[in-house]
Length: 435
Image (cartoon, one colour):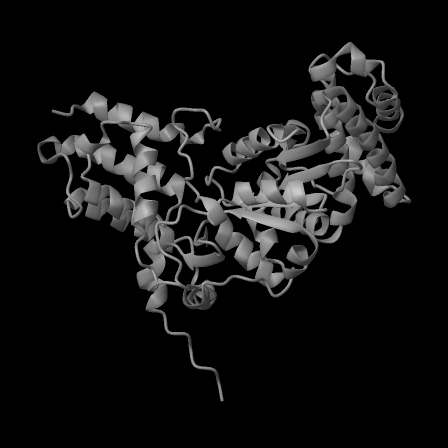
C-alpha cells in the first residue's frame, strides 16, 4: 500500500522538471515534442546545415524544455563536423537590463571569447583574436582585469557602463561592426583550432528578458521588439551561424518570419491537428508521451493514479509540461494522502474533480473580459498573428507569458486557448457590432 513518504517522493520527482536535462539523462523523453516533420530540432538542424541562412530564432513558451532541446541541437550539430558553442546569455547580462543589438552582439562575442579561452587556454591567449578584443574591452568598456572565470563576471558588473556607452554612441553601426570584427576573428580561430568545417553559436535564455514591473517591463518589451524585429541584421556573426533563443511572441510578427528563420518548440500534442481532424480530438500518441514523462520520473506512479486519471490531467493541461507536472499531477499526489484507501485514483475521483476546478478558476483569473473576444477568435481560427508591434503584439505577448494561449505543431503550427478555458471562451458571445 502507498504511504505518505512515497507520495512525497512522487511530488519531488515532479518538481525536478525545473532542471535542464541532457539528452542522455534517464528522465529525458525522446520525441516528446514530435518526430519526423514534427521534430522542430531536427528541422532546425537540417536548415542550419543546408540553407544559406546565418541567423535563426528558436522559441517556445516557458517550461516546454527549450534549453534541453538546444542541448540536443548542440549534440546533433557536433556529430556533423560542426563546432557548436552554446552558452547562457544571462551569464553576461541581467534579465532586467535593456537589451539592444549593441549589447547583444557584445555578450555573444564575450561568450565566444570565454569558450575559446576555456577550450584552448594559452594557445588562444596568444592569438590576435584575443589580444585585440581584450584591448578594446579595456579602453571602451573599462574592464581592467579579467578573472579566471572569464569575461562574464566583469561584463555583468559593468552593465551600467555598457548601457551608457551605447546610449551616447554617435555611430551604433560602426560600434557593432567593430565588435562583429572581433567575433569574426574568434570564430575563425575556433574553426581552425577545432578542425571543423563550420561554427554554430547557440545563445540561450534571451526569452527570459522581461524587466521588473510596470513601466520597466514596458521598456524591456520595446527593447526586445526593436532588437529582434528591427535590428536583426546586426545580430549576425561573420563566419558563423547563430541561433538566438527569443520570446515566443516575436514569431507572431509577419515581418520577423519574412526575414529570419523562426522555429517554435510547441506544447506536447495531446490533441490532434484541428485542421485535419475533428477539433480538439485527443491524440493517443501524445498522451502516451505524457505518461512516459511521468514513468521516467516515478516508475510506480500507477499506484497513485489510474491511466485514465493521468490522461484526463494531461488533456486538461493542454500538453503544457509545467502545468501538467507541477500544478495538476503534483497537486493530486499531495491530496492523495487523504484517500489512501482509494488509490489508484479513478478519472472521476473527487480529488481529480476538485484539483481541475481549482486550476480552472486560477486560469480564468489570468484573463480579463476585454481579452475574451481575441481568445474567442483564436479558439475558432487556431491562428495567432499580431497585426502590429504595439497593442496586438502586447496582448498576445501577455497571453503567451501566462500560457492562456498554447502553441502546437502537428506538421504545421497552430494555436488554441488553454483547455481549462474552453468552457468560458467557447460560450462567450461577442457583442454585435453597432449598426
